[in-house]
Length: 153
Image 1 (cartoon, one colour):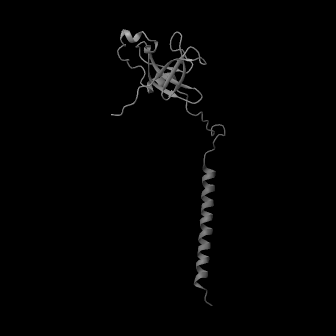
Image 2 (cartoon, rainbow, N blue to C red):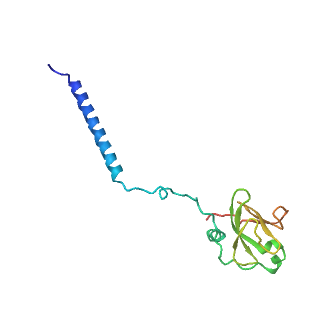
């Protein structure tokens, strides 16, 4: 009696799949049993997220610490706004951020929103266009500092 050609191939495919499944199972258990044991407490990874930037890092990113240009003329020193020169800002959500401000021709320093810039003014707010100085956080803006316009080369 002759068997069909297709019947032989089904038998061969089924035998191959059974052998492959047995080999995969044996390999899995061999690796599982020979793997070193891991302590449960050391296997947990704790992610704190990115660290909050410090004012010094913000100053370095915005070019702080560089020597400011020559002091303005005596006529320009008469106005209060000429005492302050803004070099850069990092504006965040919810009125948070930093501004890089030079006071009285000194090198620029980073100021966080709410920090004291000079004797009677503090940094009230920052945005992508500049910063605002005021005597209090909820008071009227005393001086608005606008960033210089970017001109591509």
